[in-house]
Image (cartoon, helix red, strand yellow):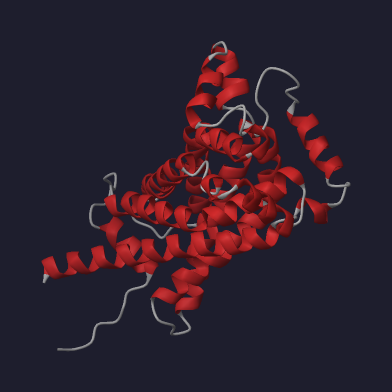
Length: 307
């Protein structure tokens, strides 16, 4: 029995879409993979995220952020994890599934140009922002230590938001800070999907084990994308930590406040960047590698059925 060569990720994607040209493709593994991998990576990296969040809000060193969490006690260490677990699971489902469906519509068979990947990534990021911004909003309030006494649980935050009028629920409650979230998510998804496959294909040509290019591509690409958009991440965290009708600063005022609080130095805005690199490397590396693995398994099963 001869040894089969492993098809590249690009060949697998083109093969899947070539099976039924002209039809709208539906690949359940893209949705399932995104959900499972994002759930696992979020749980494993949540402590890192919480330290980063404290640095973004209080502009303190890593050691001080860790000291704050330690002082609050272990019962609060995973406080606020349920909203991100749910939102990141949905994020993976929407991000990979929507991107796959949009790319199939733009380019049913392939090959997929940079423009197609950029457009599909951008639109999937918009869908993600609209669907998941409320989850991030609740999460950021829960993780702000200054809000623990007033809002001890997710229910208390939802009760506060629902006490507003309809417009208040949207603009001051669930969708506070929506515009920077929209820009961050759409650009982030467009950058990630535009360069994920080219990096992976370039590494695959070096003769590495088939799982290494996916892992490295996802890790490097996700990290670079996150660092490019890090100022927006800090702005969103600060905007969404505010709650109530009183002293709700505008987008420009919030950006100015972040800039002033960091001493008008870009380096201080990037405080916590080292942990962001670590978290992004783990999260996007695992997500991309698992997605590639499931694609290969699905492709292999289809080949066996044909044989």
